[in-house]
Length: 526
Image 1 (cartoon, helix red, strand yellow):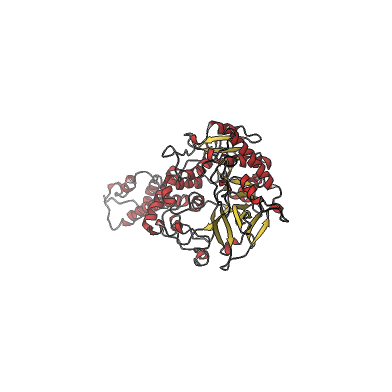
Image 2 (cartoon, rainbow, N blue to C red):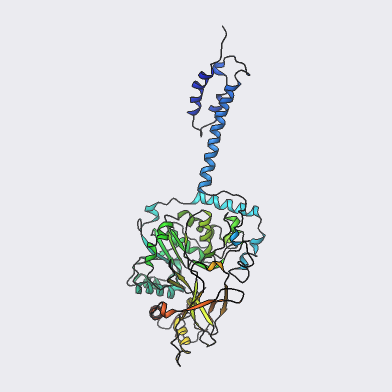
């Protein structure tokens, strides 16, 4: 009797279910076993080739589903290495927007990084993204946020060399009515017991000291030697943010001077919506920088981040914060040749992982005084940063932290009187005379220079013979077609702040001088 192979209907009914029931992640041996003849019955290869073709197509379809699924989850979670992205038209005009005079730090463009090949950049990106996929910790609320969901607080850093600035910051927060809890992070041996006691006993604020080297932290920082080197000082900021107890963090450098209670920032729609708010710096990233290719970010005509102040929701930005940690700790020697240390690692970490953020619209201004020599030159010693509607909220005392404000006040008061108004540490705020949020449209010249007068260093007041130092000044200048600038009267904009600052500064200095036995102390500054 002649034996026939099953009909097409029978083949489909009996074989297709057996294939579809096999999980696609199991061994392929079961699949290929289906290619054997039905029940070992004789058949014509030509006659029954469609059955084998159908089975093969089913296998290929399953494999295609596996491949598509794999690449879907890979590419949607974290970008893969691709070719260098196209340059955005908005910053193609390098002559007028990114040149030596406008918003450019040449050492980051024409240094060692300019010789790196695309192949090398792809290798470094591969290492970075592999670390992101393997090492980022899951956001476990109970472990990561001990203070609880929705908790808010201020985070800063402290050392004995910055204790004057830190105590002044705490005093201003208290005077302004801020009641947010504060966490101060420090390297283990950089705070003495008397210094710790002064901070812990600060009245009116809930202040907690945290050791950034504590092994129980989310990302403890380990120093290479007994004293931290220059680059290790930049790692403490992101480590403090990641290891904080709060879900929502306002990070403030110790030399930042709040001019209003900053608590309202946590309630801004921009922050609640995106989970990250940053403030602009003076500089832009040049179109030829390798960082665009490394992070697969289209070149943008935008300002870099000024990270003296940061507003972050740790729960919403967790992966991006970890990548920032990678750039500052794991591979800092590489990234610090591309970026100006820690401040713009935040920006490109967020861009790399496509994490949304909000940039405050008003560009930075310079706060300072007309130099005490009477030459009439404006000296901007602090960076003025505004809120979402353009009102000033922080003064970042970049240069003030290096001089004693009491001697500075005495020097600038010498040219007061005689029909002139009393001069103050904060006398004017210099801003670019263009609509708020449009400063990036026109190149602006920023010049740095040394003050004409010399002042005692921090802690040098009443300490006998102390070597005085000049102070770094910055100002906007025009002359190459840049927009004009204007001066805002500081006392009219922020009445009473100068007196409040001096009172808190003198109070902090008195505490430190008492610790030193009334002899005055000269702090070691970087």
